[in-house]
Length: 192
Image (cartoon, rainbow, N blue to C red):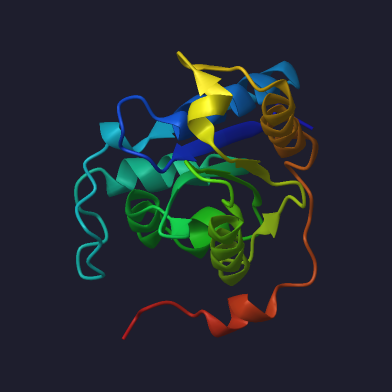
């Protein structure tokens, strides 16, 4: 097997994003496990609000190319109102089966409060609809302002959880999921 490639999408636009810090930590472990890595920082891409009639708008072709090149994809999001952030949703809307079908996906959510789990559940549903194989281990970073300081983890247990996600993204990079999910057969796209 060739060197797996792990891409991570940082679904936060904040300059001092805890989500980005956590994804960078996961990617360090993916790299240590033998993968090449790519942090897709949505602040660096021009992605207008998704319009199905303008699928190639802005930097959408670059985004979709970088995701298609990945064997594993990490989706990282801050938690807003119990779900994942709009920048990540917008980026995912530009993608489809060509980018995600049968890919390994790892999920990470970062929250100011104590319950970032619903955002992970929502992302897991999206991944099922795209016929991904979602890593069973997911990383949740509650109370991020106390877990991360000056761009580094100070909570070693949470750091280990995030590091495991990066290592798992490499370990399961070329898993062959079978059978296709029920949701993927129902999600034929927004062609109408």
